[in-house]
Length: 130
Image (tube, rainbow, N blue to C red):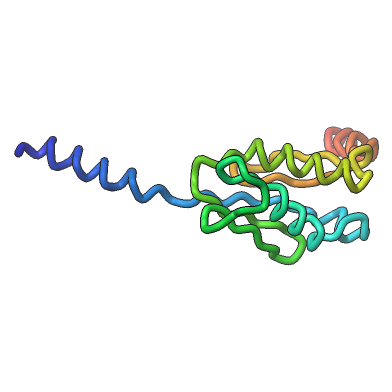
């Protein structure tokens, strides 16, 4: 066995223990304004996330938890962040908040629920003038 063979075997071994992915959905603002309850959102995700084509049967593959105003989803790949955005939008629609809130990716592993806001544009223009 050459060194390269050993290295390749190690790589294969490493791939099997695929790390879990962790995504955060930040609901700070809407929760502060009492528009949204993170408990309801957590429950919604637990019921709606599909694992192997079945909704609500999460098993060990997916874990949904709340941390203050954030909902944290820890999952075994394959699990897409885009799917969480889809479900979040679905929840907002169900709660009749879709017209006021949007889901924005604020990092590679998290989404932020923000307001559609004209005030944001004003804030941006005041930053330019400074």
